[in-house]
Length: 170
Length: 275
Image (cartoon, each protein chain N blue to C red):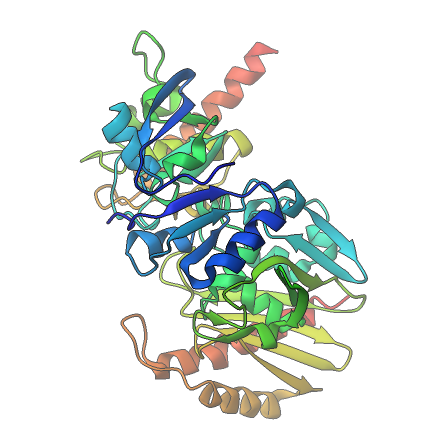
């Protein structure tokens, strides 16, 4: 691959929530900033910008990662999921979002997009999680409002709901 | 916080990356997962001219067992190692330690070799390398060299890797029969840097205790057949020798107490699980 010059903006194309998007980025541009400023997808929030708070968590090729510790040029051709992709096309909230709503699992909501994206991957791999496992998964996301217990409850309810949905399907 | 400007090169081969390092030396930095380097770039503690991305190099994306060592290529993420089916059998110490390395979201990108190169004194993977007596493979256009853990990590955030070199693999000794392993750490939040981390291995009559988070790099104590009082004395001497200092997270005294207590507990856990 040719060296991308720092003095230029480079054309970047990737899939965002199933749709192809593109824009221009200098090599140093963070994925979090690219999503917000270049694409206009402001659902992903930016907190600490050094990987500690987890507010900017998105999924790249299915894996929950920090978008503030990823460069826009690194996601060329990859598939990105953000909080904007969780609700259905008609705006119906996903089961996890509904559980957050029911359980008051957010107050100010700043950390919520990151927590939702983290839990989406976690619940795919852990269909019957314990409170402790959820707590460990959430250790990478800071919430200063809720005290976490409502978030844990929402995650437990969602896991149960998804398991029931799977069983009914069979 | 935004990084200072740099050129970006996604290397197509190890040779291309090494060629670039040979030309630029200190002005280039290698990025794999970026979970340590990206914060340093964002805070402008690192300002390279060129960033060489090796994360997509298939030739560095492997885990294999060779001559009693688990060799982990430089593009292998911590999550890949954690999910490696052989891990519980071949490396129980790494199996116990890996869930303490950051959070699952950072393990999804952070690499094993990247953590070793960053050489944070409290990080888990360098501690395991030192305690198990592993080694690392460094490459430059002049060739490769292999360094032991103690030769490699020379201080806080500093290693013997030269500016024209990059780490291409790390090697951890495989599990031995009749050996016990244990790992534990104390941190303010799960996944944060440990205030004190302890790794223990029993080898025949000997036991080895590695401590991270106190000295400027992981330090290993080896003891013959320790028993009650002599163990407490040895741990106390070790705690003082490590020379920890006060910081915002804990006092030196608190760290010494953790070495005595967490160290002893971890040793006992290793002895108890010896098959």
